[in-house]
Length: 242
Image (cartoon, rainbow, N blue to C red; front, side, top):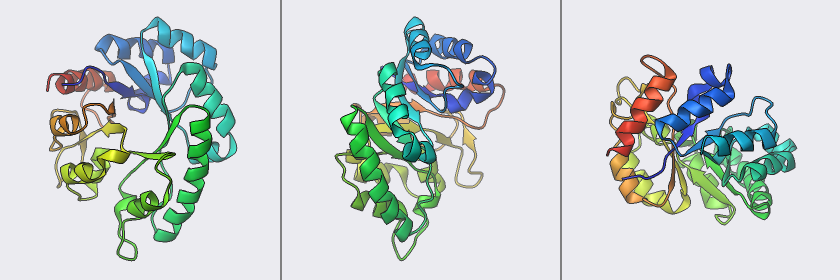
């Protein structure tokens, strides 16, 4: 059973776009202990830090686009250090061939080393396209076979692992050592491939939590029945009561 769970704020972007701080308050009331950012809506780091402390949330991590990682890394690291964050995560990259995987491995090693020097852990968040075979290999595995694992970790999104047709449990057993932070996101089934609330799909979150109880877990949802806040609340209860 988990005693802490963070919310990926992309899940409630319809609310953060209107009232960022008010949404943080709602997330905290649900019981989430932290958040993973997907943008800051031009809020200064010191003001964000103040609000997080006020509502008793930690800044676990942030998804930072690859262009900003390449062009504004120092500023991104400074912002996250002000918040006391643990991870800086690349949420997407065009890693769909062996060649592109090799190029990104070189880039990620540099980003990861610089992040480590600033006291943060750099990770890559997968989707499904990295699991399309190229030259008999998964580009994602080519990437991780060629990065320095001291500096580059994986934030597996288990929805996309399942969506790509892999066995999530087997995949995570094999690769758990490189996955200190894990995205919990639920797949309804292999036919609809819809994203649903935590308790309404086929991925066994309890198994994953038991497999790696010391990892940091982030819950994300992108499709909803009702409001995004209602679904985030419902899913929190389901995950924490497993």
